Length: 469
Image 1 (cartoon, rainbow, N blue to C red):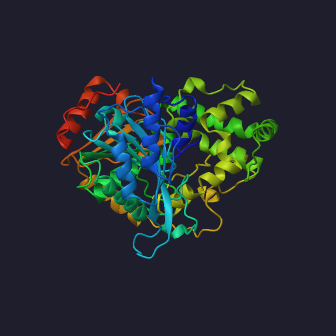
Image 2: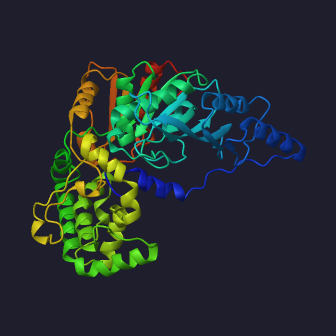
Image 3: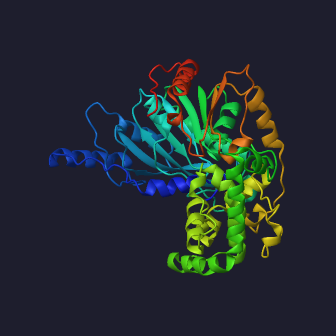
């Protein structure tokens, strides 16, 4: 899917191609019956049991499950398929205050995933910026750790019944993560680190800054810190910095071809809408224009190769297919529009985002003369941008954010809003030449991978940290 912080959407598409490992089938029926009976007694009526993990005599997942129930007696808990090498996995809907500053606040349920390796293992807190997906993150593999993934408030299944937009902000979200971690520390007593990707990476870095004693270190992947409602540094990056001058020119020329082939693209998008049973709230004309304006951001964000750009001889089908791959036209359909309204509310009121450059293209725009991401915000919300929180966090990240490892891809448009920590800090930034928004530590040369591992060992005191593969 598109663009910007919404890295998770392409990740969803990738994940859907890979089924999770099935739970092992128990060999003996008698042993199987005992396990299922024990699970049923442990979970009680509030547990929705999908399938029982394959427990061995030395595993501690069943006791942990009982303790989770005691911590959150009103939670909804479901057993998930576990990953290879893990004892168990749970989805939990945790009761959370909508307003942490109000003791009489209403409650909503926030979704978390717990992937249980063992009580003697370290712990990785994953601060997602959107809805969550059940997958193992690179730090969890490196540390051979328990993984706790927390869905961002107002996203996915973590949506309050009373959709008061005033409580969708960093301050409330940080307390969500903090309260969940503090409860789980009663069970998972070994060392913690925090990690996240994109908006989740920014959130992980901020969490380490806000609660420096709660985690030993942060691993912030492609974490942008925008400083404007539509930060102009992103436009400068794809107009002047990313790739080569020749490639940047090809990207711009392709933008023009999109708009010049508008009439031929309309029936293709109409057919897409019919096949996938969606509509385009902006109208197909505006959708095409937003796709064209979005194209350079997404092109560099995903680290696309210039050889993939259709040539001047390309027909409308070629242009359509390339747009689907790089921008994802479905980002503008009604279902996705609704799904990401909370994210755009936060972008346009507090987090910041990026804008669109119409220079050299405005004469080809007919449906949208003044493009802005404000069009994606919820219509019932008051959109007033206040940059003070991100300005404060950016300053702290640069000057006092200790033990944060930043991982960036040099081509990624969001790297233009990345943090360059003060050299006096116990902080490390790695930039991968040619890397995009999916850049991981495993993608770096061995010298930098080794530096990342040795630095994390020093910061955390965890000796058994593996080179990522």
